[in-house]
Length: 336
Image (cartoon, rainbow, N blue to C red):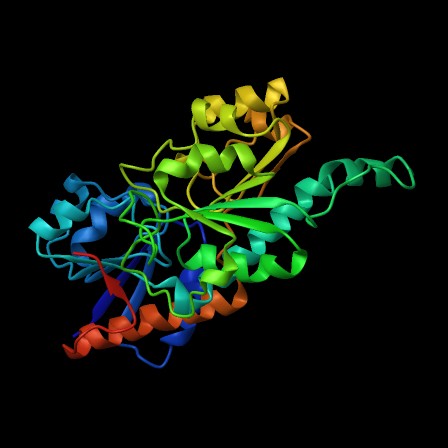
């Protein structure tokens, strides 16, 4: 008997490559990858589906007659109709970021993006080509106020790494030990081992996001995207930010209102934008944002490093082996 694993789409190819490598000694586990547009035609033949950036709606899930588990090669599950999966008796899971190295990798990328904006990455490249010395004039993180919106696993890792830069950290989350329940944050069930209140200079709830935005030099979006957080960085939010402040997003593109972002970049109110995630992926190479000098866009790689790829491939492989043996599933967070 063969257990079949379906990877959806050819993006993020290392995910299936590392998984195949890990499972090469187990011929009874078959790993396939098909284009996203072909997933509805073949999903009925598989036991496990790894979605990546493919969206699985209720119609597609209804065709998954053999499916036992839908999972992400990472954390985000906003593209999966979890209610539909539940109705069809299919478990949906993510790989927790606190063990995989994903949160640490995303935090490092956030700092890279901040520094890229502060030091004017694009203008430096132009200066090199034009044989200029001592230009452009950038800025430092030292003394800046950073607003981490969504103080979950990534936010915690980010704060730990920002502390040595001599910054002031503001942060919002759903539940602080000293605050009443709030509305927004990364998954409240996420493991927060090692959380240290001293990492944050001022803690707030969702009601404080505009107040914190007014005081921050840099806003970093670390929120999980759901029905409550989609479009949360809108015209009102960006208008409340300091003129010239910077915006970084390492979570999901849909947290930002595209039109509001473009408008405030063009007027100069928003001093710079750095994103590892786009509103639709892959981003259109002709997108107007790519023509702006104060914009840095990376191809959704914040959480994807050699370390995280190998860890998550092992998790997928182990889950496939557990499912094949009929054992309980471990190493994943089942959300339904």
